[in-house]
Length: 145
Image 1: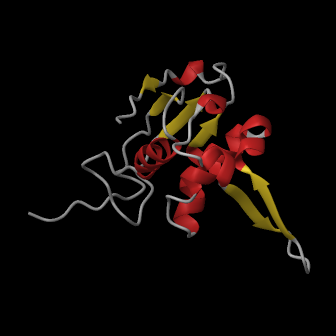
Image 2: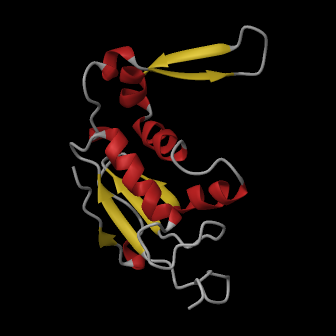
């Protein structure tokens, strides 16, 4: 029997899932969402093809960090200019841009190549419980752990 390799013509229709991030640890949320985005939960998973599904994350502002990470962890980026290293505490990021915190966590867990850039576009993150994707009929995805 030959190994199945997904192609554009044989790829199944992508499903939509909704995840409630209330009181879910950020790392567990990110790793499981990344697996669904890549399609690793399907038997038709192919490493070099986009076989994943769409994921909607709601209540991103209620995600939790374990230990003292809320005070100690820093969001770091560089502007590209000399002396342009910027560091923002995660506590400030969670108050102002909690959707960016979840996005960066998931983005770090998918491949850093052209396929990863295509896959991350299937992620939708909302701070509150309201989202505009009711027409897609998303199924509830339970995060374990």
